[in-house]
Each structure stands twice: as structure tokens, then as C-alpha cells.
Length: 593
Image (cartoon, rainbow, N blue to C red; front, side, top):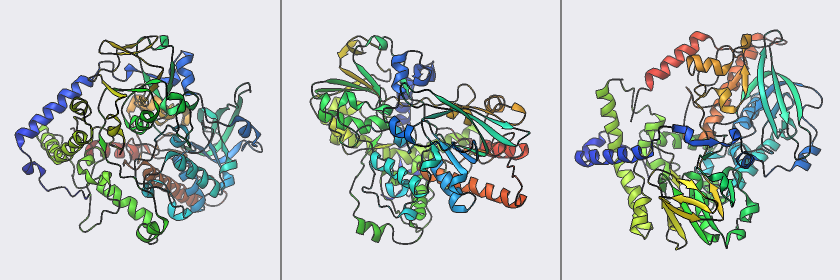
């Protein structure tokens, strides 16, 4: 499944057909655009109703075990490196500090709102969840740990356990404070340190412990999609059945567990799952096995490709994958080059899966092969046509696959994605489309509108009420950007105050994103953050986080080396440097599709 793109894909496509497809895409997009935009959703952390806000409660935290752990701040309230986030982003930063010799583990402290390591893999434990990228590329530090993933696409429980494994390997367990929320991070001009205010939640009936910590360096690694949301469906609070969000799967309602996905409690239940993006692709097949009736409420069809899951044979893995020193980085680069349509002559397709056979996906990630598109309308139009022509055969294959699997023609038509491959992150499943061949599984296609309202008994779609016992929301996350344009502080939900008390939110509100390399910004010394604003992007997010961690560690190492022993390093980008970087981003990003 190699993805070499033709030099001129437009010459391989009937222009009338291409124009008709683009009109179809535009018509389908128009159905889904709403004047209220993201306001059609309710972020659960901002919900005033306890029934919705409580959907954020941590169902996985072992409060008794965690309360028995000594606090990493019991001896001192000062640390050299403060890391917000215990997912792969925070762990890779801490590990890079240790491996580079910049810091020992005892000079690092990690804080996370969750009750354990893993970030998104701590929270997400819904049935059917796997990594959508090849685990040999996705799981970091495989070469260093010698770990062999059990499957080509690792299941979620294994990924979470692997995060715990690397935390233990680099002795970060007792350096981490869980169940804790950071309220503010404020720079002290006098002390040249960061003051961090945080609160530790210790479970039902236990008092919240508030602390103030000082740190020389702060790294914000709390992720981007951290605020689950539900649609604002009129009448939802009147519904008498069970509701939950897939980011906090309620096994008390469904039965089973992440390790034993036997959902026995649903055998006599009618269940609705609202949303058909990546989460539903994983959950629907398992729900279909156990529910009496399953209603899949669809606003936009998913873009579903074959997964091709397979077990990992350790000997084959050693002989064909981990065959030489540096194998994982080489494999990650190969995957990234295929994702970005930047394949070098003679370069093999080491991964050879669904990610590497869609060259037009580089429209969203960029590619050195495309060059810089001028802002003229003519050049913009030519480039858009080029990408659509490159993408058309691929998307026709995706739609044809739906017809080849789903037996009912009307249902198959409603499951076909009418948008280009770069519109949404692709999904991969060998079971999702097949589930709609089961007589008790019903697709409720809302033609882009969503449910009209809820009743005490269920949900209403196109004027018809569907009584259900359980409503599961697979409706994603609030994407920040409304209040400040999505500053790093807003993304992680804290207040960050830099030199002279300047607010990071205010800076973003005044100037928009202003960074150097996407990881640091003027007026906020010794503070680093991960994210995609003005930085790098790839479909393999953990690979990107590892590169950011290496880059930031190098900057700190250079700064420490230049000031000399006994001196405190201050790392701060100049205003001129971040302005040049911002202008460069603006110059190379003028492309619309």
C-alpha cells in the first residue's frame, strides 16, 4: 500500500466528475454548519447541572491506595522541574531530562488531574479501544525498554500499562502527584522562580489539600483534547435513564471492565450512542454484541478504513521490525514521510498500512513536496484542485468498501463519507461497518442535524421518539479558541502570569499565537509547552511529543552550560524572534481547501 503521488493527479481524473464530487462535498458540509458553531455543545467542566458535571468524575482512581502514598512534596515545596501532565508528553519530557543528564529524577515533579499515568489512555477505557496507529511506531522508547507490543495496534489497557512501565523504569512513580488541579502558575521577577498553586483531591469525604510550589522550570504537557462535551439537546435533563460520556465509560451501567469487555448488563437494554467519530468506531462493535437493541445516532458518517489487526510474533518482530539499532526512529520517520507525501526515491514503506496509502492527507499536515502556495486566488484554486484530484480515487475506494460490507443499500448510502480524506482524522476498523448487518443495530442518520430533543423515555430524531434505557455520548471534546484563541494556558485550563504579571490569555487575546517553534513565548521565562500552534504536526502525536521533549531539553542543556556552575539559567525567547517565527508560519500556511 505505497502512497506515491502522481506528478499531476489532475490529468488522471475526469474534470466533470471531480467538479461534481466537490459540489457534493460542499452540499454535505453545508448541512452540518450551524450559526452557533461550537456553542451547540456543553463542555462538561462548565456545566452547572450536577447530572452533567458529574460525568467528569474519575471512576478509576484508587483513593485508598493513593492516599497511602507519601506526597512528592512532603520534604520540600521547591523543585527544579515542574511538569503538568503524566501522559506520554510529560513522561517523555521528564525522561529526556534524565537521559540527557540535565536532571536526575529527584529534581523532577509531575502533577496530573488523573489518578494514574497515561493521559488520554488513563481516562479512555471504553470497549474496543485500540491505538489507531501501528504500536511499533506509536509506543515510545520501545528500543530503550525492549518491550514488544502484543498486537500491531495495541489495545488501550496495554498502552496504559506501558505508560506505567516507563514511569517505573525511570523512577518517576514517587515523583508524581495525582488527582491534583493546578490553579495558577505565576512568575516571580524577584526570585526568578515560578509559583504554582494546586489542589489535591483525595476522594469522597476527604478534605482538599492546597499547596504552593516553587519551580525553576515549568512544562505544560496536559494535552489538547481534555474537556469532554455533550450536545445541548433540549430536554436531556428530563431523560430518566442512564447517561455517560465515553471518556468516563461507566462499567457499573454496562457490566464488564476494560480487561473483560463482557457487557452483560446490556443484554436486555435498548442503548443509544450519540456520535460516530473515532470513539464510536471502537465501541459500537462491542455494544452490538451485547445490547438488545442499539441505535447509532449519526450526524456525519465516519471515514472508515480496514484495520488489519494482527498479533505480534516476537521472533518475527525481532527479525523484521527491531532488526537494527535505531529501528524505531527510522520506522517513525518512514510513517511520517508517507503521511506527508514526502517519500524519498527508493525509500521503503516500512509500516505499509492504511495511514501510508492516502497521500492527500498531507493537505492537513503539510509537505515539503508541495512547496509554498502563493496567496493568489488562482494558485489557491489550482492547489485545491490538485489535492482533490489526488484524493478522489482513494475516497471512492473508501465509499465502495461501505457498499461491499453493509448489506442494506439505504443504510450503506447513509454510512458513506462525502468529504475529502483530510477533513477528519481517518478511522480504522474490521468490525464497525459489519455491525450494521445485525438486525438489532439501527442507524439513526440525522442528515447533519443531530437529535432534535430528548424525552423522559429517550431521544427524538426526525420527529420519531426512540425509547432507550441508556444514552452514551461519543461526542468528543471542546476545542479551545473562543476566549483567547487557544493560548497554552487556556488549553490546560489554568492561569499563567509571566513577567510583570502579564497574563498569557491576555497576550494571546491581543496578539494571537506568538511563539518560537511553538514551544515557548516572550515574557514567560523558563516555561515551555507542547501543542500544534506554530509548531509541528503529525498523525503520530506521541512521536511529535518526543521530538518536542528532545528540543526543549536541548535548549535547557545549552542554557545551563552557558551560564556555568552555580548560576541560574533564564531561558526566554526575544519578542523579535517570536515575531519572525509567527510571520514565517503565516507565510507558509496560506492554503485553503
